[in-house]
Length: 430
Image (cartoon, rainbow, N blue to C red; front, side, top):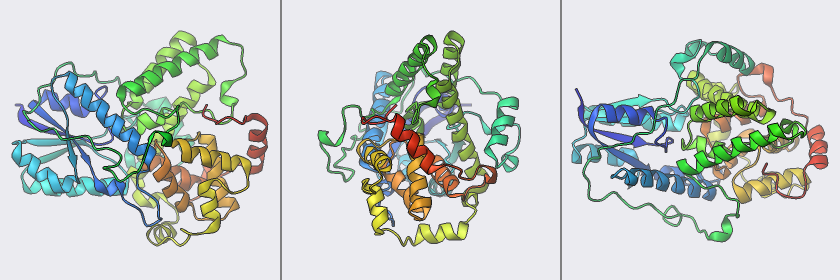
């Protein structure tokens, strides 16, 4: 029997394609109420004197929500945009719109998990079920060859067993028809100023990322066409180029792109044009995303081998005003390659994985500054910030993650010499 009305709470899943939560809501309801909350807690200053969300990601988020709104409008509806935290408004929405059930995607990082738990308790008091979906990973947890508690902590073992024994499911199709709950006021999309930013066009470079499902799908299409050209041209292995990045991560982090969509489109390209090193790097990146999310699901904060030291630094940071930390943030360390990457991060909200390894290694192992300071700075600056991947990568570079066999072996000086030889004076967005 269909529920009368289902509230579909969008979070980091801003797409129509491959969205099981949306597909099931449509199948089990007479009408749906899509909702997105612009939660103030994600736009405040942290105890590290950084922002939870910097201007580049805020711009990308606004574009992504606007794109989702347009998709719903083309189907004759809209998405309700609420300026406030879900704990404050959800109970009223459930009552006002006579909601029978609420659907949402569960996150794995502590702060996001707390929000889900609070919401579950709040709705339970109203005798409303909060149904959880997991739509951020390439592999569904039930399709893994091991239960969550037995997932290997060593990435190489996770990769080997998963690729051998698990299967990537097909994508859910985008809905062609949606019946929306009747509503007269769908809310206004905030501006950057509404979110507390002072910005103008000069703050964003010409090649800045554009958020949204269609932009992500178009970028993926162009990326795979480039792969076809790489296959046809007798060039040096592109995977050997320092700083290679597919630049898909921003759309993946907000769920504008499904990892399964990327996987199956890539497999289509491989079938048509053959494989290459860049395609392999994309697949490897998808596996790392899964690994870190499942590690946080398995361990929580215990993923960090130094939980007491982590909590001390995280809750009472002592190095906010350290001169070397400030120079690192501003790209003024005096080390040309490190500074180039940090200036690029500050300007564009993005640097390649190679760049991230280099600047994090420099901060931790050369400047001897605790890694949490770098992780929260990346949280502010990155367009593609995702809690599990960001904190997991920083912990691994610091040697504080669970994968003891993959502790940081990044040779800073060797990498610097290589980059000085191969990286031109233009920005290294490749």
